[in-house]
Every structure is written in C-alpha cells, then in structure tokens.
Amino acid sequence: MDSDLNEKAEIEAKFICPDCLDLNGLITVVNAFGFQYTRKTPYSQTDIYFDTPAYTLLKTNTAIRIRQKGESYTGTCKISKKQHDVIFERSELEWSLSGNEIKLWHEEKKPIIPPKVIEKLNLSGETLKKVLRVETYRHIITIHKDGEFKAELSLDKVTFHSHNEQKVYREIEVELLHGQFEHFKQAIDSLQNQLQLQPAIDSKYRKGLLLIGKYDSNSSPLLYETNSKSDY
Image 1: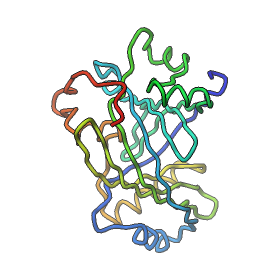
Image 2: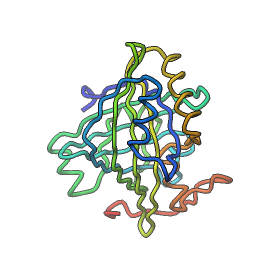
Image 3: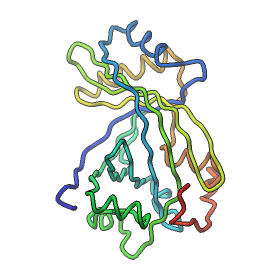
Image 4: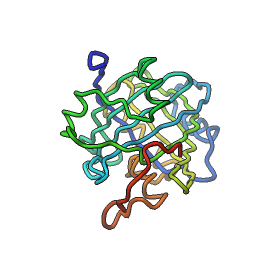
C-alpha cells in the first residue's frame, strides 16, 4: 500500500456559509467578478475520522480519515503547515483502499493506515479509534480567470455524527488547483468582501468535535473511550 501513497500540498480557504446563501448566489458573484466557471454534478461523501484515546492528532492540527464516495474508499492524512490570512496550506498524504482492505474495513471496522503515515506521525504503538463520522452533500463549481489560476469552489452541507449527537453545518471551501498564489488570494479576498464571509478557522475534524461536544476550544478535548466497532 505504501507504493500507492501520494503526497501533495493543499492550499485552500474556508468560510462559514450564511443561511441565506445558496449555489446560485455564489455563481452570481462569480459572474460579477468576471470569473469563468463550470458547474459539476453534486454528490455525497462520508468521512470517518480517527484519533488516539488522548486525541494526539487533534492536538497537533492533524487529521486522518477514510472517505467513501460512491464505491471508492480513500484514506487521507492532513498535516497543517502554514496560514496566510484566511488561506491554509496543508500537507496531504492520500492512499486508495484495495478490495481486500475495503472488506476488512467493513467487517472489522479497522482503519487502514499505511506504515509510512504511522511513522511520519510518530504513532507507532498507538491505537487509533473512530471518533467522528461526517456526511457531506457537496455542490461544486470550478472557477478560473484568464489562465491566472484555477480553483474548486464548493458549498457543503455537513452533518457531524457521534454516538448520540448530530449537528448540521454549512461551509464554503475554495481550493487552488493550479496557478499563481497571488491571483488565488485576490479572488478569495474579492469573494470574502463581496459576500461578507466569516472565515472558518477550524478544520472539519475540529469543528465537528466542537459541535458535538467532544472538544472544548478553551481547554482540551473531552476525553473518553469510544467504541471502535460502532457504526455511528
């Protein structure tokens, strides 16, 4: 599985989506700024996040998840690197689960984490447990302007699940696909100012734990054992 481990830099900005804003509203603003766009078919995905009993990953601004989208299952490890105002840069390690690994995942609910990821995060000997399930319904458009940059703009309806809690949250993500950072930043600033968007400073993982009451932003995670075989 290590041979299929891909590493890339992720550059994105995230904002809390106002209740009154929908995809058509975003497209109207995109048009007003002269951006070209392509609208994609919306889709659903499910993410399962893992951490140690002491929430080691949360404390180091790291996240490990397994994502199901249709029939495919993809593992991802995100490590925070830099922050440029409202834009975040993360290192992203990604791998695909094979048919046998998907079967093991369904039957035993065990996370399939490549050894290189475990070594990179110094998690050898640690137990990883399922701590959060996140269901996302995503609308996406790709935007670009005069070849300066290309970005993926998504409007997400996110539902966070724990054992007995469920919270809904709406978020806007804009990820740079290619092009110059300064042009991307100018586009982000324009969108933020026009729509008066509030930055989403937390990752989806941290935000989910905050909303379902597993994490207190003024102190530390509320630590308790989770059932790794649960289907929450």
